[in-house]
Image 1 (cartoon, rainbow, N blue to C red):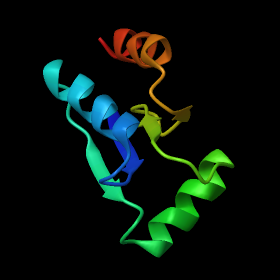
Image 2 (cartoon, helix red, strand yellow):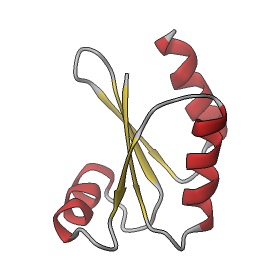
Image 3 (spheres, rainbow, N blue to C red):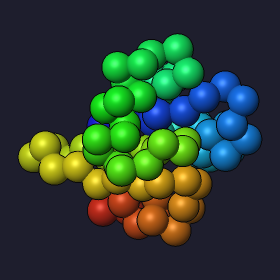
Length: 83
């Protein structure tokens, strides 16, 4: 499973999400939407949201699951199905 996180450096929930994944040794790609306008547009198209964090979980078959905010229960469920 690939994980892409759209975030900003000043967002406390973004930091919490990334720390949560790091503590569980889960690899992810972090995209700073405050510096990348194209990525911000991509995030809005995928999530329908302008707020961060937005995490995109991409399964091996290319399906995407969008998690908005630091939703620990949904994140744990997706990580569990990846094992």
